[in-house]
Amino acid sequence: MRLVILFATLTYLALAIETSVPYWIQTRILIPNLIVILAVDLGLRNHGVVPAILAFAMGYATDAFSGSTLGVNAFLITIVFLLTYEISSRLLVTNAAVGATFVFLGVIVTSIGALVLADGAAGLAATGPMLPGIAVQAAISAIVAPIVFALVALLKRIAGLPVALARE
Amino acid sequence: MPAARGKITGTFLWRNRVVLTAGALLLISLHLLTGGLSRADYAAAPAFAMLEVMRPVQAAAAHLGDGASSIVHNYLDLVGVREENTRLRGQIAELKGEDARITELQTENQHLAGLLELRDALGLGAVAASVIGSDATGLSHTLVLGQGSSSGLRPGMAVLSNRGVVGRIIDTSQNAARVLLIDDHNSALDGFDERSRARGIVAGVVDDGIIMKYVDRSEDLKPGDAIVTSGLDGIFPRGLLVGTVASVHREGPGLFLLVQVRPAVDFHALEQVLIVTQQAPPAPPDIRG
Image (cartoon, each protein chain N blue to C red):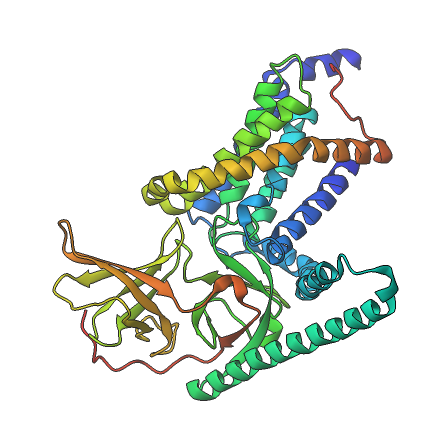
């Protein structure tokens, strides 16, 4: 329950930042994708059914504030969680650098995926000119990711939740 | 008891519970995606609730954003001034703050006056609303408004500014609404060239911008022509400015022209908008297409 409350609060804050910060920074690609960072944190350090449902809920919440098709972000954030979970459960180390790499790839997958799911083949064709911008946002998200991971770990400690998986 | 627990944890379902749960959730997402449930259905209710829950934060941030630029400018102006000028500096800062506030109020006043003029010109029922948020991912082009169903807003209503067409409402909660901008890749409206009367579909494209589709190759469109709404889509009243023709491509095969349109509205600078709450009367068919 504490994990649900923690991630619900973090998702609320992340969406508040992502929908409000463009008032100050109009270059959208400079704003990190905080939801992907949180989904990667869930996939890396919280293996279970509840984290999977949380990832889906985070994507669904993003859908409430992005695009016109319900389910796009719910699908993509669940994919990011599942891939992170699957790959990280086969890795010996899941430190911040690994997390940042997952975040970088996650932002690229969700960005291209959102365009393709919402616009089909035309969306895929349009990813070419948009790729540099997507890569910049992915890089910024990857740079910010270790800070967010540390913040989540700190909040988990405060809430009395396990910070890392038992095998670590 | 531990033996029973061992039995459960050893099963295929238990070992793969995360993958199976995620798989089930992916199927639910696909069901939502493929139109199994539209935004009007019960599955969309939590999304509307979130829109409402987020509204106070977004409204506060929007308010803060309006003041933040003047604070930053004031600070930059004061850097480097000597210590003995502290008192004067304070006064200047105060006056500048006051000036920025008055300028802000004047700008807001101008916007609202423009919207009032537009409402009077339309002769239709309309409600003004403030923009309080933008798209969460930036991949789609949407805005969040600080008014919702309690002000009479409903999905499908046209959103305008005093410069032209902004978009249409796609979601509403009690006190907030989301607008799909006309430059979003899922947006389309019926428009025509004011000079040549050639009709087409004005649609957003993924990598930013607006195009006019399905315009016959024989039509005489020229850069600088005004593109206005036809009123035939049943959403936007007739004769509202959408943008101007930026370029017309006649090269290559195909039945239609490729027309790039420069939007009349600067979507990044929107602060107040007007929502048409009353259905426009049907447009007379004096346009080709």
